[in-house]
Image (cartoon, rainbow, N blue to C red; front, side, top):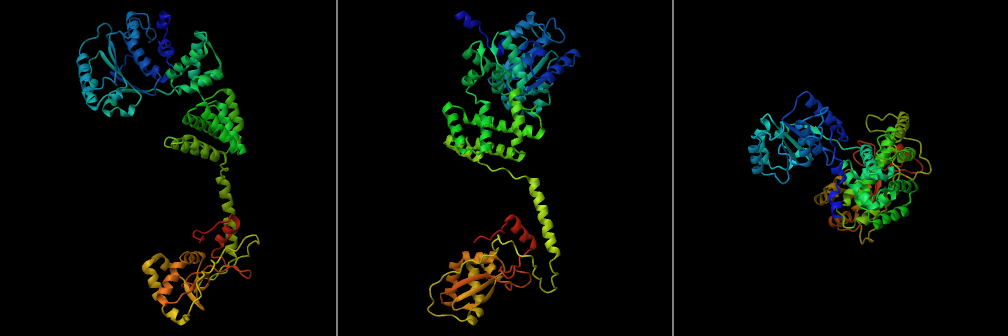
Length: 552
């Protein structure tokens, strides 16, 4: 039993590429390196950057092997000579792999500078592979600069990093940089299919798809997940077993959500969240998958093709069939909504409650209005407003004449609503109208000392008269009447302070109010209707628009 365990090698190591052609998804790098070897145009320093598990260190080892191989074949190592075997087994004195995370100090780099002076022990080149080079300190990078710029002719540096933005520009400028790409799902599935065939393992395409998606562009991660699936399921792996082993949210769950959106089924949304929580799924991982689900719909909706959707052919066809149920505006709103939920879930103490509320909100979201349709309707309204304006009389030179338009439809309520009069206690004595008119400026000055904005509103109104102790104020529009109504208690207290008489105030729209230099909005009665602007009247009638500040 001990011997069997000792002989086992994980898939990522056992199936590590031994030739440049075996490196998956990085042909732009391998072809360039092979051409450089063929033409003897080798750089003294290379920088390999890219996500984890895409072949950076593997390619560095292949380059080191082919440079020192005794019998290279077609710019590939033969993997049979002693040098190739030593490099493969990690015991070559001419190829030194250094972990940048644990050897990041200036002292380690000084030791490296001393060792580059010695000639290779066996091969033609001495190759230094520094993994995660971005972990080196600033002082270590500075110590490396001179050696990196002018190394001995038989020394080559190969740096690998997943965070190239942390590497100083002075280092980047001294290296040939190669950016490794994220590996596609189809390429990962093809690699795993070959490995499964060689290992005599049966696995269906849906299970392979789940493993490849879980790898998230990393072939090494996908191979590790494949090993985990084999340990659980044995040599026959089914889709349902992979779902259970990896605790992955099935793709059907996401299509179920889009069906809930179509039917506006809030109850079903809560049931789905309960199933996710009960099954122990990672809620943020679920939201990430939902975001990708809406992205797939958006791609199909925009391009009319499912070629860029990373899934199986069965699901590609479903995306093509169901994408017509949503508009582009709807899908963009869904993506923004899910992104906001995913961000908020990090900071909430009750992620389930947050997800339940947001899922109900998502399911019940109304459809987005089409911008083109709205613009068309606005153009029609502008034309109607222009026709109304043509029939309007030309204003005189003194005061603009009111614009008369046909009365609105009976279903439209009056646009102007006078606020109800402010009730005040029955006065014990009255005040005369001449006294109020003579001291009105004094009254306004007291108001202005305490509320300047309210005083500016009153200054553009007019005192219509007194009826008993009821002060009638004429306003030009509903905004002024609303402002007076909202501040009635304050205005009454100032009135009693100035005139020593309790009173009440009535504000009403009156066309003679203000300075007379513009046309105020007339009061709408059954006999005549004078809107302040014909275009605004059309917007009120057709779209139900309201002017800002109309509400009391």
